[in-house]
Length: 376
Image 1 (cartoon, helix red, strand yellow):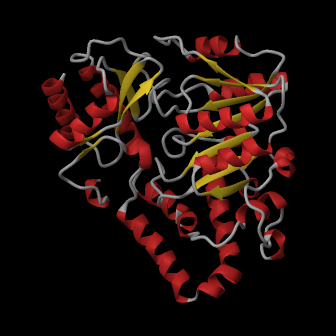
Image 2 (cartoon, helix red, strand yellow; image 1 turned 30 degrees about the horizontal axis):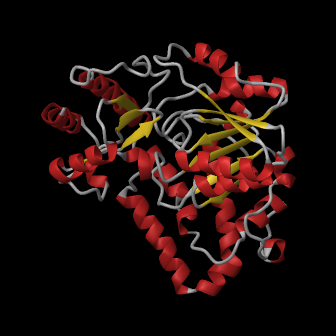
């Protein structure tokens, strides 16, 4: 599959999880949309774009298991999360419960608005080594109080690469009358997703990561009963020019001039994976991920965060490493060994994360082990 990607062949790329990598046929579709826009920008942006967006939304909705009119495209999950946080009616005495594994910039967002509006952010610690999803749900739920109004949870965490039991937590939250807000940035095309079956109140996903769509393509799902409460980040033309059926769509979809080409390319990303037996690709990558993790622990003398099972791990895994400066370590890997891999803090620990996608193979894993033997 390497031939389908523009990635520099001199670099061992084990960091699909950060920004993804767009396959050549999908990127060409992206450029074709941009070219069509430029050939007649006025007609495209005033007459055609909304029909194109609707078709793209419905293809994506079918893929992630929800109605196409219950999601909107967003440039990135950060924008989507900010949209929701600013729309929630939270105040003094209220609590937002999350894990201690949430994405740093979005934790910062929650804390900013929490401080501004007087509500509390509660971070449930992660008991390592983890055992089972059932045990984790019980542990996490111990932090739920009568003041818990929102549960914000990553279905796959960026820092640790763990798959969390989002569906089980959504079910318990629904019974308790608590709003569930699931960050699925790493989920689409990584693990199966059916939003209707999971039944969260809000779900955010990235298309530019594991679905490998162009950068700047993500989505926001909101349950129909909550859509009227979602305030746009920017007030623009709305229904004056956008024929979308609800304010949720036209107020959030039309926020000034933008390039919609990445959104319109999402169906091509889905089709690319369907054309290349992505179930088999994922299975191979998950196996390679777990096998490589075992090899790493023959070198790294730290305790695994979780069992080496598909319950917890998909195509990413994070390993605790005893070093003093993670950033220096990351850039040493890149500058000296041409190995691209993220290294970052998690509480008082430092992790490095491996990720495998279609273009990776055993040679990439061998190169990682070779480098780790040399530097650690």
